[in-house]
Image 1 (cartoon, rainbow, N blue to C red):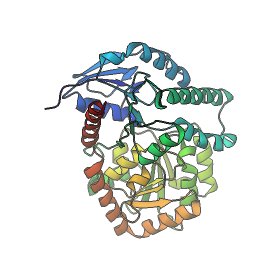
Image 2: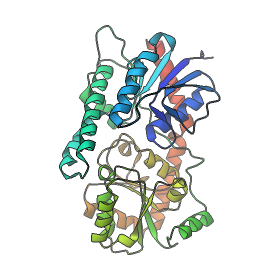
Image 3: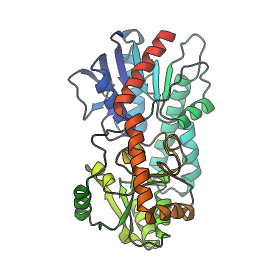
Image 4: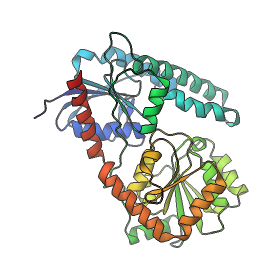
Length: 387
């Protein structure tokens, strides 16, 4: 029998809405069944605290740069290396961490942001605070991730093969132990809909039973390629195809205008953040995600759990999950090419269903939170035994 570990999780805000935060909630709840788990967080929402010790972390929650700085400084003071077997930081939150989950690498994300900065319509203040945030988090990453003489290397847990490559490309991690532990889905909540459930959700949201629905999920629409999705749907000859957009973005009016220019404003449904996102996915037919940069989109796995084929660019996470012709298709950052891929799936419902069934099966086999918690625990003990 393995010994009981004393584990500290360092995450600024914990909830089940954001990808990295949701992973902490799911894993912490499961590990707390066997181990002494402490959570150092500013907020702990939608989390079972009956077995978890929440150490509330005060600070300045806004803007993002102040949120990070005040948390990081306090975490470095309160989370002591000798007090825990495992100090598990989500990103560069706590300098004392000996286990670090890597959701993204800031220098890699910066490349995309700089490429698209000129065309962004955001305020000068927003640009300034984002630049400060990127600079500070990059500096914290460099300090925590790079090897240093006399300091034991941490255990790195990137969420995808692409993030592992980004980590190695931007930082010299020496001989540190690296284990890929992906994001996952709640397969009891995210699951295929029955016929009546699907029909009712569509009826309530103005979607016909014969419509083919491509669903797009998330914020940061420019980075996630919503403009490409709108342009692609606009090029389809089938007029019964609708694009369902779940999430919000400060530039929504620009995307609404783009849909109008493409002649499909009535077929692009901007539904905002939804509490019934699982039902919305399950009532759709295709998950469409022409993103430019991701670590491992949680929405991708959740859509697959709902039985949808994944139509996505070959980015981090998607490249680990999508098997062309089996669980979905890869697309390029080209509306014409995206439209061609979509059209094949629109006209062939049998292929859509087959790929969706394969996607669901793959999630059940490899992308459940129970499996992720088991992989995390095994990585802890491997690291401790090696050290």
